[in-house]
Image (cartoon, rainbow, N blue to C red):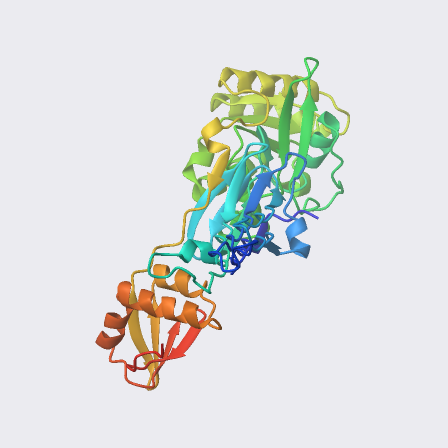
Length: 433
């Protein structure tokens, strides 16, 4: 089954918690704090695997999580970082962030990586909170949650040559002759319901990848037939083979079919209509095709196209066509191999989510919500069961301007204040010592 679109959720690992610990040694029963920091959570990383050709795996699994960091220990020992989760994707995968509503990467080279969800930072142990005025802190920091991102993956096949044409003109038969691909072949329209890739290997062991694309028909760019699902796969090809049924199957007019398909390409993307095309007049094993061939050749060559008469059924003319395709690729300065990517683009990171400035707003008569990247991140790491941690959090509310924002929002005694995962009752009373 060929799947070329998928939506997935990725979650970085949570950071490990810091720990509360104090040095206890002989002759020093009341030593200072020595709680270690937690380890960072693992990242979720997309990695291009050249042996993958489809997004089928994501049909059965759509949520990917990285490992959380381990908690710190005494003696200021830092916890172990969480393991990254590597998610394999096929070459040609375009990644869109649904929250940012933008394309964030185009993964084409084997081994290319994209960090799509960063792990949370490990929480600080109580040793990190020691100050001259707070010499024995009895609180630590929880690990920060990892990022959660919602992604859409879209596959655009990586092929040197794309074969286009109406249904049933012989595209699948041709690719089965010149490569090891074995697509379904039958005498009815839309046999090919998915793109097929064939790899042609030459005597010098170089290769050329050919994509047999599903049949296009009039209105394809608007979604008629199968067109809008598969036109994207033409976008990456460097050369097109426009295959025609020279015999005029079901009383079709080959030249009109040729012009109709080119119109669909132009309507979808004008750049596609500018790609070099080589015309293959197929089914030369049939008398009607041989009869039509001189007229078709003359008309197409007059428009500047290279024309080859072939029979995908017998293999006649196919070798000459393949050799010509290779020559044209080399003439364009294109290597007949997989795409290469500069080293600096092999390790990529998804753009961070937009920074949210501090703001407070009343959401009902008794509740005020505070938002802001910095304060929400802090709130997620506060252990609200530890009195000293709560006191530290209250200090940060004042230092970061949260209390001022709350007063501007009209907070009142007894209101519930929500900051990320934390909820508390607002009061102006001084906390008990």
